[in-house]
Image 1: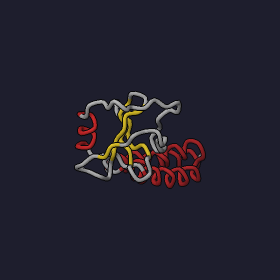
Image 2: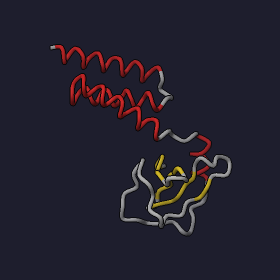
Image 3: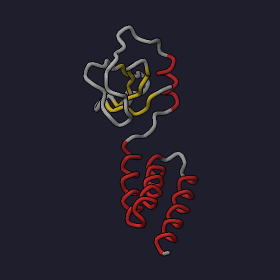
Length: 132
C-alpha cells in the first residue's frame, strides 16, 4: 500500500512540476524519468529515474525555433548521404555525413541523412533533433 501511495505522489509531483516548467528540458526529463522509474521500480526507481531523466534532459536541449526554421528552409544538398544505421537522437552521426554550420548560431549544425534533415551538435556530431 505504501508503494502505491508513494507512486501516486511521485506521479502527481512529476506532472505538476512538468507542467509548471514545460520549457525546461531538465525538469521535463527528471519528471518523465521519475514517473517511469516509479512505475517500474517503486520509490527507489522514481529517484533513480528522476536523476537519469534530468541528465538526459540536460544533455539534449531542443534547438531554438530560429535554428529549426533555418534548417527547414535550406535546399537539399547534392551530397546527401544514406547510411545503414538509423538516425537516433543522442547518437553521433557517422564520419561519412557532411555537416553544415548554421551561421547565426554556431552552437548547432545540420545535415541531411537518409533523406531526413537533422540538427546536430557540431563538436560531438550528436543528433539533437530529427525534422519531419
